[in-house]
Image (cartoon, rainbow, N blue to C red; front, top):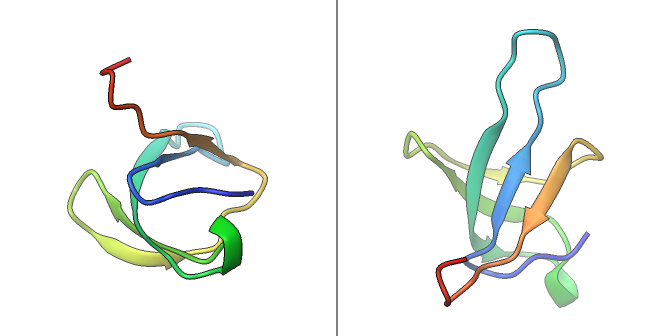
Length: 65
């Protein structure tokens, strides 16, 4: 997995009833865009994250798409 600052990580819920969560990558700590990442979730919580297979990278878009 590779991500850049500004990309969004979509973390799918792992169990029934658990909602998907979105986090913005605010710092890349691995080499060449690899994990771990410092991320900020929608509620303002920040954490270090090494995403698993339940996570999708949504690249940052300057066009508003």
